[in-house]
Length: 352
Image 1 (cartoon, helix red, strand yellow):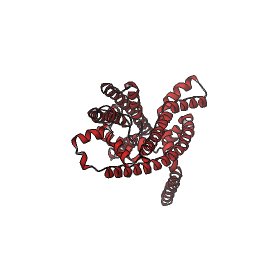
Image 2: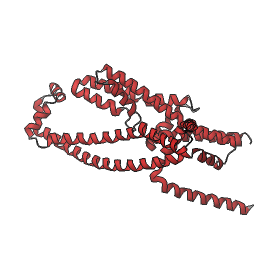
Image 3: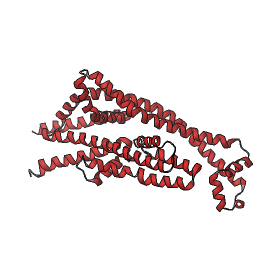
Image 4: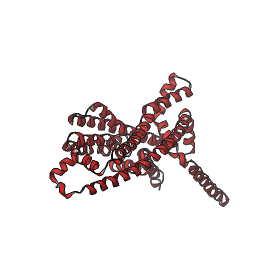
C-alpha cells in the first residue's frame, strides 16, 4: 500500500511538472488559444445544425470560420488599427501646423481658436506674454511628437503581432471546432467525477460562456440605441451611423463605446457649442458607458444562478486582469468554483 501511495504521489508531481512546462511553452499563444476555445463553445451548436445538412465536417468548419472572421474578428481588428493610425496622423498634423510658425504667428493662431477667445472674455489678455504661450505650445508639441513616434512603433508591432495571433486563432479554432465532440468526450473521461457531476461542470461552463455572449450583445444593443437617441437630440450628422458605431465599439476594450461618443463630444465642444459638448460627454458617460455595469450582469443573471455582486466582480475583475477575454474567463472560473463547492457539499459534507 505504501508503495502504491508513493507511486501515485510521484506520478502526480511528474504530471504537474510536465503540465506546467507545457503551459509555459504555450503562454505566448494562450490568448488566441483561449479565444479559439470560447468561439468553439459558442458556435458548436450552429456547427451541429449545419453539419446535419452538409455532412462534410471540413466544409462546415471553414464556413463557420469565415462567418466569424468577417462578422466579428476582422471588423474589430481593423477598427482598432485604424483608430491608432488616425491618432498618429492627428499628432503629426498638429506638429506640422505649428512647427514652422514664428512666435507672432503661433500667438495669432492660438488666439483665433474659438475656445481661447471665450476664455479671454473672462481672463485679462495683458496677463499673458506671447513668449509664455509659445513655450507652452512648443513643450506640448514635443510631447506629442514623442508620443506620436512611440505610437507609430506600437502600431507596427501591434499589426504584426495581431496577424500572428490571428493565424494561431484560426488554426486552433479549425481543429477544435472540427473535432469538438472528440475533445469533449476525452475531457469528460479525464475529469475525476461521477457522470452527473461531469455533466453539471461542462454544462456550467457552456451556460456561462453563452450568457456572457448574450450579455455583451445586449449591452451593445442598449448602448447603441441610447447613443442613437443622444446623437439625434444633439444634432450630430448621421446619427444612425454613429449609433451603430457605438454598438460595435462596445466590443472593443478598454475604451468601448467612449471611442465614439468622446470624439463626437469634442466635435460639439470645439465646432458647435461648449455647453452641448460637455452635456453630451456627461450624458454619454452616465447613460451609455455605465450600461456595462448594469445591463451585462442583469442579462447574465437570468441564465447563470450566481449572485449579482459576484457576477459584477467576476466580469470586471477578469476584464482588468486579462483584457477582453477576462470577461469570459472571470464568470467561467467563478461559476466553476461554485460548481466544485456544490460537488464538495454533496459528496463530502452530506456524507460526513
